[in-house]
Length: 372
Image (cartoon, rainbow, N blue to C red):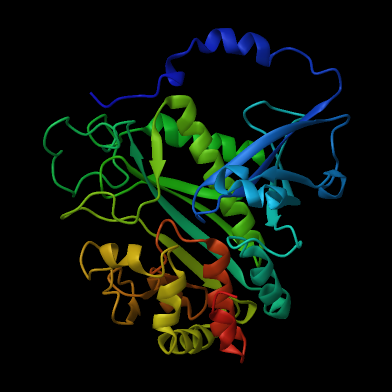
């Protein structure tokens, strides 16, 4: 049987007694930030005297990185946490808050994994286009032994073909986790718009959006935090590995749906086609920022099989899921709407992805696509 974490087996009834105690009018605020590796999330909590009504009432904070430095560098080991957006806390409930933060170094410059500032600069430049994003976040549930949750201890489950959007204990593995995450997102104020089980067993997807500009990255990172926290309560892990199981099993993507004001209006298909043409000329540059390791993770996923395009080729088509860019059939028929970039990996940084897309499609200076 798949192993669960020890903490998940603690008595939750005992915990509930303490969770129901009054807080004396004070507020717990959990600061969330992206870790040094650009994939993991971290968080710590402080007490505020009153419930903050806006992000402006959340003070800056800091965290220590001394464990990564030598004794000589200890005096330069603090990083600044700059609050950027606030959500309700679905774990400790109102009036408590979750706050996503940017990380600045000692010189108050963006930390190496702080791609939000560069993204916001581009989104401010293209604001007139009212660019909307919707991300399809795929993830896979694992036991503490790092094997897919619910899979046989030895061997494999039945082949793919009947798991996607499936119903039944042999098809929808981990539904409790998905439903709790969905509710947590709604409570927090995340713009989660749907969910479904995926093609590989123990694999799920949730969708966030539509979000305009920088909001896509903000919402998606907090939705990921909520996913990991819910999994923590159940004693399992959620991985965003783009190819968690080798062989004839679907990988995990972070498909990005994109539209501008012009694309959404009558005759918008011509602007979608223009954007796809621009994207075709910057394929290699986009692949480099569509996973945290410069395309290395996506090389395992974008093979041209299992509903993916080949990483070395740019392709586009209508109602085709084995291409780089898909135009949905309804969009083709209506002559307006959005397009789907299917290349981003599940573990992508949404700030880098949305920045690259907005830069290539809407800015003349395509150098903005680069990670700077």
